[in-house]
Image (cartoon, rainbow, N blue to C red; front, side, top):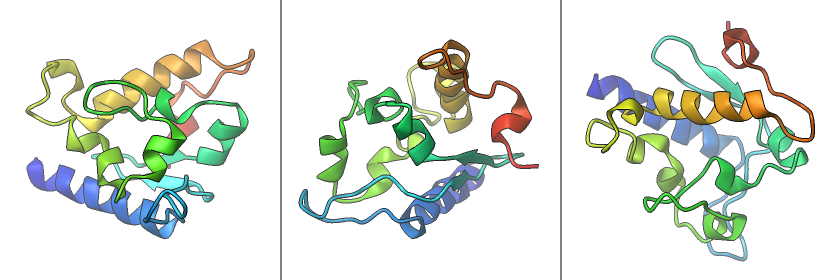
Length: 135
């Protein structure tokens, strides 16, 4: 099981890197990928578009948070040395305190599904599996 999550983590990291995240100082900074990314999953991968969410004024911190569970701002993310801190699996693993959120899948489903149901400015996101997951 740990090998699977390690592969997921490595794949997501590589996808983010090749999708356009630059790593460096605040001046250069890491940026949200402009291309749609594919988040590898145990059974099915999921698509995610940062531009779609940013255009809806979804703040970075609505998805990305620090180990203290406080939302990260775009400035917080820009000064990070690498994107490993943004990986859900860096905290959401077998050692995570809440057993219901010990996997990236559980964290994504909890956060994304709830937000998609609530919507933004009257626009709801997909809530069916095929709305996000790649066939």
